[in-house]
Length: 632
Image (cartoon, rainbow, N blue to C red; front, top):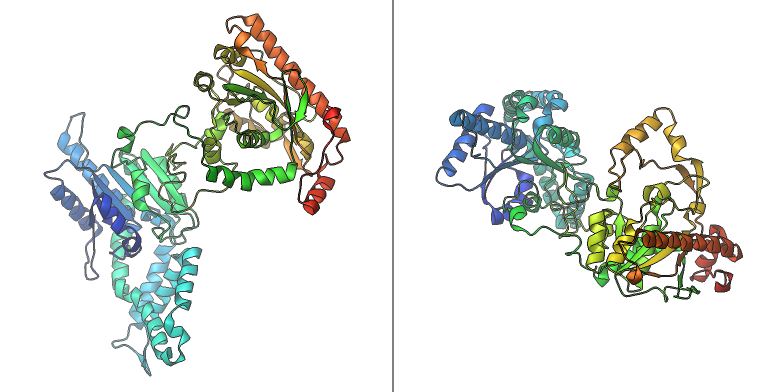
């Protein structure tokens, strides 16, 4: 593929050249526009020259062409794409199929937001200073050549708005490590070098050139690259912006453009400024994994099957999550686990949990759904990998390159194009999927059982996660017994799990229904909930209203989990509705028994409340003891 880079007002692309060009040239036949200091081309001339260049290099080839524009170059890239598109439509006439010359554009902190910036005020001030103070000969003070007022003011203005905080630190570190700073005998050399840096502004953008390019490039371009025309630009586009660009309102512009450009997506680089293409960004990778897809990965790559293609996390990945987010939860809630043998006898630990699959763990969902991490982590630690069946809301926006923004890339484990390690927070979607979570659908559940994999299901779902003040440790399950029938079809073992403790770690202020009755907030919550896909296919979003109660945290109460008496389904005919219904009710009875036993036994647990337990465990460095197993 061919890539053409269009620079900003400097005419060179200083920031991109240092960090991106070498990598881009390994993937693309890479071309770069250079506009010399003495060049006084108009905006229309730049557009025409670029269009002609594209025509020349594509005359005898069908290779795809991508335009990459940074800052002003982003505005120019859009104008070029519009011009080429117009020419093609005029040439094609009434033909339905039009072969596009330009296959995609990449806009980096594009100056299409120039109208909303303050540069139409700043530029005249800078150019006026330059015209009034430019001396015929450089002024010297002893051995030092002093920079012009324009160079100093312009340099200070640009240095105030262009670098990010991280880049400021890097600049300062580099400056402080200059060898001549440590040698007093080289003081003159140091000062001369420092003063010379101010001349960069006047060398690359002298006052008259800056005025010309602002007036004849940005102002003219703003009148050409307008929303009504951009809406017609039906080619893939990627908008890369720095979250904290102080030169242009790039983050807002990215949000605006993704609503206007038909096939667009955005990549917002956190903490980055106007020079977004530094070493923390790999522009080549960002382009390859975007909708532009110049190497046709989407066409040639086998689609990822979350049921069959999922692999167990490595020991390193497991330990990383266990030692960070899971440890934090365990330190706070000090969970106690119990299991049950075939005769119904309880014991501490998971020694009596079956280990031959498929195993279906069915549990009540505690308040706010925080219990999922406990259960999955404990089962993995005990050599029982389990696939959590999660609500669709968990996965919204999680798949790679969905909608208008970058999401997780399954293979890379991070956002493509961002040279940063994956987040260490184990409660994010990335780790849910890494640990095998899939969306709860009848098809996914069926296929997990069919392929002999273990699954964790919360039949009460959202209703239990957002239960009310007086509804703790109750089951709100549908009447349908589908999970029993599916489990029986594949002779799965069903293990009921009773979980207690999370609701006692929060203070209820308002139930979900009471939140809905609040003025203004209630309507907003209702509208937001309507946009969330229901987990069950046989209910509407209205029936499964995802509105959280209003709660405040208190000291974390200890959590208890009983893995109940296993239900072996090899003797259950999945077609026998009555037998399946009986098993379904027996599972609920076993879970309710677990609730009752835990609530009674924990009264004998000196450390069930957060204060004494946290103090004990902090001092001793070990888990606080609990009730005797005979209490169950």
